[in-house]
Image 1: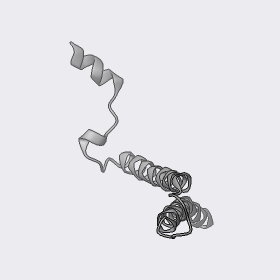
Image 2: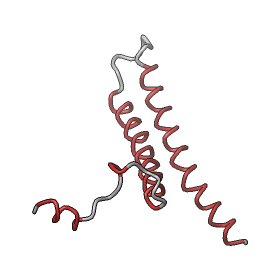
Image 3: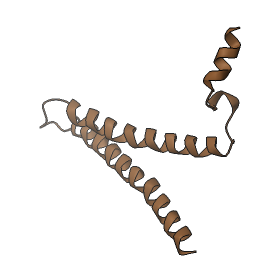
Amino acid sequence: MASLLGQRIVALIIMVVPFVIAGYGIKTMRDAFYLSFNPNVPSFFWGHFLTGALIFLVPVLFIGGFVLHHERKRNRVQPRFMKRDPEDDEEDDD
């Protein structure tokens, strides 16, 4: 019973940490955007904005891949998202 609870806590942490990192990426992009309206700032902070976009996109892609992998294991995805076997490709060539 205790190991099941531990597994669920680890799974929750695996899902929460990327959300926090993605939130920081959104905050970085927002700060770069709003600083561009400050008259004392001479130009747009492209480095900060692109870094924030990267910090946002990587965790989102990780979460999407994690969910897709989980749903594939349980056969709950549409056929176009299922992994194709190389053996099926060989049969189609004939």
